Image (cartoon, rainbow, N blue to C red):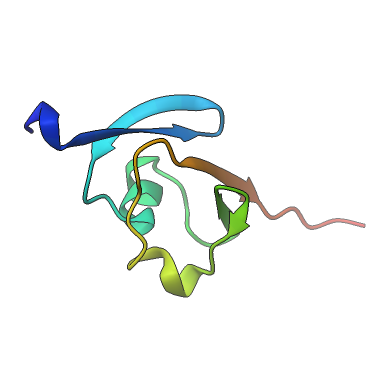
Amino acid sequence: MNEKNMISIQVNGEFIQVNESTSLAQLVSRQALNAKGIALVINAEVVPRSRWQHTVCQDQDKVEFFSAVAGG
């Protein structure tokens, strides 16, 4: 991968490098997360699962994954 095509994003507080064309769906896969049962927030905005495939990460984005927890 060419370094000039890489961007820096923050995922759950940790900076990582990804390709500039990385979608949120690809990021979930890269992080080895089970897409079912998680919510994704980018720059303080919840992103519906239906938009993950079409939303591309931007340099300096702040991405957070939250796991749904059932209980009472």
